[in-house]
Length: 257
Image 1 (tube, helix red, strand yellow):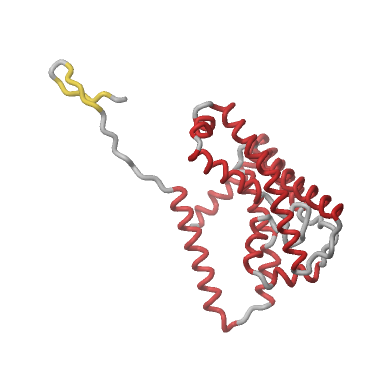
Image 2: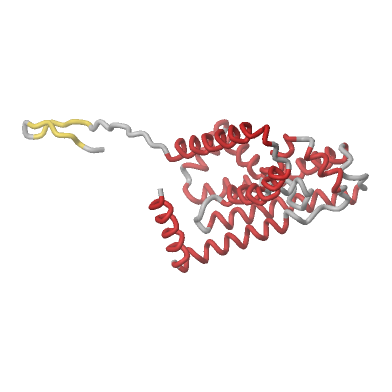
């Protein structure tokens, strides 16, 4: 176990010794810092106390907030995170099953076809972000988190929040282009990690020794889930391949495809 940790640390040190790889990592970290700054710029007209009460009493929106990169809990300019882009990607993937032309565009027309497919995904993201922002603002208004808004205020909020989603989509693609992981996944991960210190401090402050077994059970379930995801993601299955046989000079030989 000690050897494995030492080996991992050696790999990390070697990564930062390679100039090109080091520059890529620092660039990605800088983009994630920009994302976290944007996630803390609130939209106008938000009642912070009512907002905190709303999220404390609603676990579902707490989970949605985690996937939005913690932008929703602040009603920030990136309150939807990359959610509309993920929805758009799912819609396009489902459409490829319905329309053969889209499947051909994605799989058979090479890099140019994939670029066009991705471009359509980005265009669909824009109206989805506007619709989801409108629905979210109306929900927050109904909960008393936001006061009454004029038409101009609503248009401004829709424009800014939609632009925020497009901005995060662009950051995600910049990260992906560096070849170190998926940009959208890293943005979601950064949002979840950013909320960990507050969650840990709250858990410590509200720790109850009578619920000790509950904490242990929660930790065990988390570790089992992580192990299961890693096993499925990294798993492989050996499939035997049977080659055609041909008679050559009286001998039966295997002919590879």
